[in-house]
Length: 289
Image 1 (cartoon, rainbow, N blue to C red):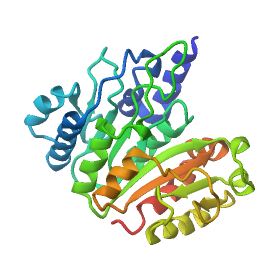
Image 2: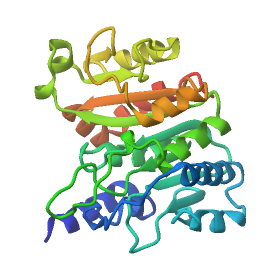
Image 3: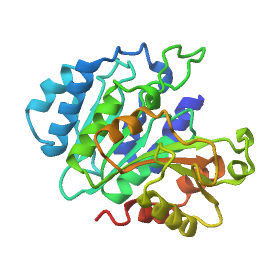
Image 4: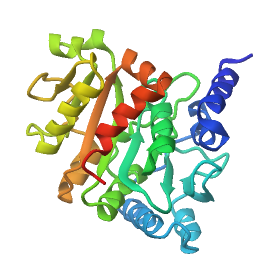
């Protein structure tokens, strides 16, 4: 059995057929990167604003098509809409889920699924288990490979639908939280604090908001014994200072951007342990009800 087939079967067992579908087509099928620009960014922001306001709106289909995306209904496990590229058109525009009904004001995003192992799966699990308002993933790999020369780092793409999605969420939920899930390699960290960390937490600035410090305190207890470090107070690395979505959100005055870097062993543990995920979710959603 090929590796891709094994991965697909594993995801189907873990997530159920509804959410497993969001992780396909495989990243290696990206055929080229769609050009960005101010006009597509504004169109994406309008699309996601409208979708979050009224997921059943008939105008969404035409709006999505104008920027190369397609709208479909949510799966058996959740109600809402899925916005992604049509089958066979994989140009890196991203994959987005928007929940309808009584939602919790958190967006769970994984801009580097594939490169940051388990972050895509973890975002999907948390979306399904928590009632989060929205979730988003990359649909092209972060770095070119021999199998897929078409690549894009969404966290460095200021004029991408992924950024439009974040801006729309901030409009719809100004007191909410956008969580970017990332993964890091302890062996590549320059300081001891980073090498021993389970999580490195930041808001993309040199001055963490009080809410981020409260989140760090919560995670330190909930995920013990995995150490939680806050940039720049406890480590000087992985601060997301050039993160495109963080910069765009700060420009809107949105204070709920969370850049959450996780060591590989913690990512694996969270994917495997529903109770541990629940403890993570309790902190991420705390104070936002």
